Amino acid sequence: MAGKKYLRMNAGRIQELASTDISAGAANAGDIVALDATGRLDASVMPVGIGADTAVIQASEALAAGDWVNVHNVSGAARVRKADAAASGKEAVGFVLAAVASGANATVYFEGQNNQVTGRTPGARQYLSTTPGAATETPPAAAGNVVQMLGVAVSATAVATEIEDGVILA
Image (cartoon, rainbow, N blue to C red; front, side):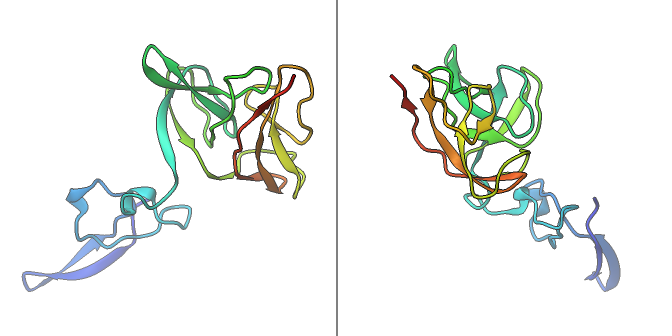
């Protein structure tokens, strides 16, 4: 969405300009900032260190919006895959808000609200599931499973993320 327009004096003449809702960096220095199509400031206009705690990491498998994910090493490079409580080493470290294809770059969120989930019970603890990428409200119980709390549901479609270390069941 193009930013709203404003008028400014330029060399004695009135000029119409569009405000900026996505920054291209130094080229936008001095611009007037506008809210984006969601009614919020785009992360690109925020100072470094302000905004969501994220990393862009290549996906080693297809990911769905809302998946809980694990970062792992592939030949010395970070990759992201679905977290899975069925086996140690695939614990969740974050989540994705948008679907990505295998090999594409995923924006991984390490904190905040995962608002791409469904069927959650408000107030219920959310645990990593043995279904890859999913959460459950009942902790896994089989030997070798990992019990890892992901956060608490704040609505049927959002989890406030507070990922804890997992415990491997004997």
